[in-house]
Image (cartoon, rainbow, N blue to C red):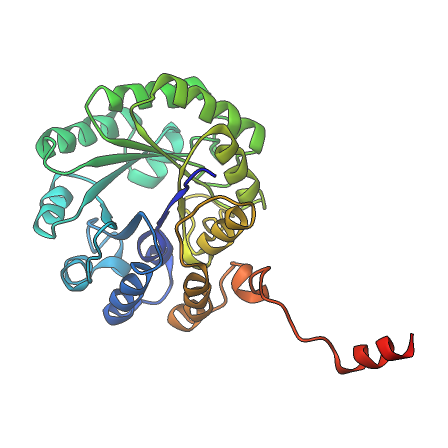
Length: 311
């Protein structure tokens, strides 16, 4: 069965909108534990201005303290040239650049239009000059909560423009959980046909309960790389009602149960998800950590044996 690769984004995408600062020690410990679960990548932090995202003001310290496991890429969000300089100093394995395919969402999220964002990210790509692999995440690729539908041709156009700049990968993001499986299949089929050499990753949110269905549609279309967030933490602060990312453990558990090779230590992953509410101070959306794996069986009630004997 096909090998599926997962990237976890909880300590960046998940933690950045938490109301209370997550202690640096907790971040480092969690990343070190995630490193032993089998993830292909861990998005550790963001080199955005600490004023903009105070929850990640300890980016350099976290990157300097984590234990790096061979085979795991430690990626960081890089918003601009200054962020790229900081990321180089922290020896990140991959730079993740972000912009929205929706003009209005890009203005709300990044305070600039799409073309200005593209120009700024182009500067970063040229500055990096192949020294570190670059991935570009395209937000609102399946719809914008303000504008509505974003035509697939717009996403394809931005992918082409970034591919022409020599980046390694593109992440197609359902930032506000507006995607449906049919839409996902059409997008995945088109992008794989047009860009066979790009490392394609899909990033879904479970805002409307379709996250796992969308992952399955993408897998059946041939996509093998996905983002997830431990416990389902995260969400877009500039999209009303946009709840968290797809839960890593829920998605990985589903695909494993279907026979896909995820290469993951699922019991360890589920245990980490169970511990996450203590770290963040509240319940998290993930389901498998609450219900347990489908392989976890329970003792029968004591009266069942009596009923058996009575038959």
